[in-house]
Amino acid sequence: MDLLEKAVAGERLSQEEIEALFAYPLPELAAAAHERRLAVTDPEIVTYLIDRNINYTNVCTVGCPYCAFWRSKNHPEAYVQSFEEISQRVAELEAVGGKRILLQGGVHPELPLSWYEEMLRYLKRHHPEVRIDAFSPEEILGLERLTGLDAREILARLKDAGLDGMPGAGAEILVDEIRHKAARRRISTADWFRIVDAAQELGLYTLASMVIGFGEGPKERALHLVRIRDQEDRARERYGRGFAAFAMWTLQTKNTAYAGKAPEASAHEYLKTLAVSRLALDNIPNHQASWPTMGFRVAQTALFYGANDFGSTMLEENVVSAAGGYDRTHATVAQIQRLIRAAGFTPAERDVFYNVLKVDVPEPV
Image 1 (cartoon, rainbow, N blue to C red):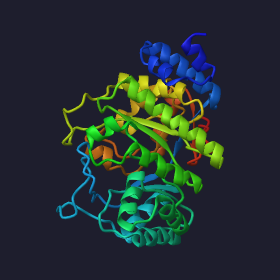
Image 2: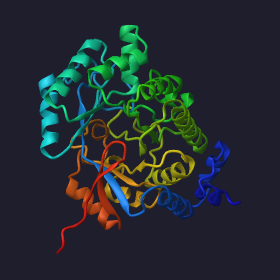
Image 3: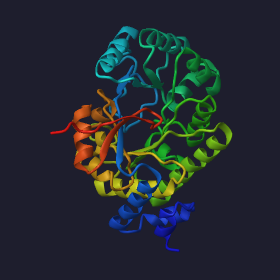
């Protein structure tokens, strides 16, 4: 059986076979990935989420050179938002029908665990219907070092305070040779998976992610995908649920110290890696397109390269935009609906677990 035929049939590919897919012509990969996507998700529907990104602080001790967002604690632009400021942003989301926030910051060297618990309780008290998916494995690792507690105990306390999920930011390329060359203090691959596993054990929402453009090649990308797939297998076996979806985007370095130090991943590379990801991750059915890094048109094209989701409205995005990403920090529901329809699909609002909440049937003319 041809490798593409094997992948379309949903058979498990080896790491070597996944690596070999990168050598196939892009149109062949696109056709195979799209066929697989149509087989495992609703072929008529493309989903989206109404949510908001909130970056509660930009203070960070990790100092990744490819991040333009972070500041040292004494920098004049450093900030920590008050509970009231964060609450106001949540209220703005509620006003447009959103019920989920993505709350992340830097690794702050001084904020105690009690501050995070109090923040979550404050937000749940004032916005009881809003999901809080917050923090990254890197932030939890920072709290481990600050408190001496392990990730499971920290996440359990945060869950008791109101945490609903821990998105999988900070994955980039889960190969230490690549990640430590790019940022020597970045969380290790083993710690990333250890903390994600603790979140999954506690029943928290998690998202698998990948960022390309660090100078990695097909071998490292294939290894990353295999490691994500293996974690999904483990989580399903142990806890009954793993990652909600897979999201992949390209590194943005325009305004960072990392600019010029690695070749930027092109739209061609993005689409090829997206297609390979769809074929490699046979156990994760939902794959996002990335309009914040690639723009609306490439994101539309991604719907024919394996993606079945257009991402979220975001309303506010600071990390990618600070690094020189596309000049958009949010999208309206109407924009997303229009782009999905123009690609030939029916838009549908979803929750974080990809349950369809509402199919957007156009009004009769």
